[in-house]
Image (cartoon, rainbow, N blue to C red; front, side):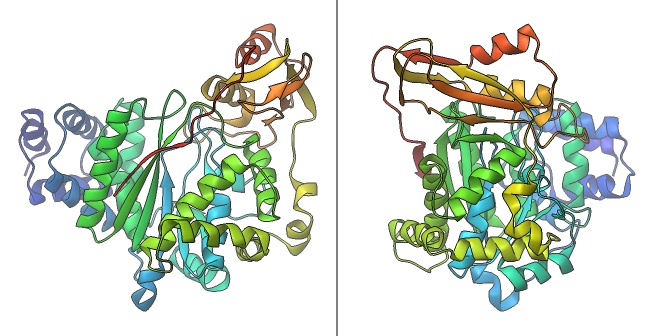
Length: 435
């Protein structure tokens, strides 16, 4: 078999056979297919899509390119979630220990941020000592000790995906729904899951800009998930305004600590409870999603989620001193730029994408894979969208390490907020649930 023939078949809109897809995945892993050929094949897939059979076959092959964890009798309790990425999306950090406190097992493989969206792994690496690299043995050990873990993708988990993603990133083929589906579901299948909840963000600050694309992605993931033995449920949620009160890496851990200790932003808590409620219902631990939500909320009020968070941190390298005094060890920017209301009124808008892009340029994010970030850069929202404010009232504070901000940066930050003379209604985050 020759790679130019496989490229030509997909270029011409033909459905690729299992043998052809296996040839591609094997060539990705052993390096026998040149990068420019893979780029051409990815573009052919981007332009001509894939049938559902092709997507399922590619997903299985990518999964089987590395380690696949078999939990045996524990499998019905093995669950996870995946978000397509948002601004201030820190849900995973509290959801994993909350689910563990309810009796589920969560072997989460998470990623780093790119462009304006934050990554779960970056947030955890703001905690001194937290080790995000791990293999199957580490995952099993931490699950046994804490009931949950959050590790970065290792070279042993779906290695074909890591290689293909790097090429997709530089060939403008990231937005392909078949390729997104295979990338995500292959990793989740390698974790040995029985159930998966997807949080597909929709809106101006999301990867998916419109509802039609989001629904297509949800249906693709659900069907491919079923094809590899995972029950998948998709939640479509709005992503125009930042989630919660803190944006940035260390800053988002600070908000999660508040939630784990029984307080925190309802905006964030409601997303955690909703995703957790669905997973508890899917795993058969409760009869309804609403009962699952209440069970998740109770883990914050009774301290059981915080207990599993502490165990997870300990198993992944954090000392007990840091665990017990974590706020003191989280570095936040020494300098502050504040944004205030110019009138009496109501906060009408905090533009998540504009704000995240500025924070990224100040060091909180990266523009290319492998770039170092500054975990201390972030923002705190003091008046959320819909809140009533007085003239001069504090809306937003940006914490950074620069000696001073340029006029351009300050102007862009000021353009992130808008205040209305009339009350502002705030729509629910949830748009719809797709099963």
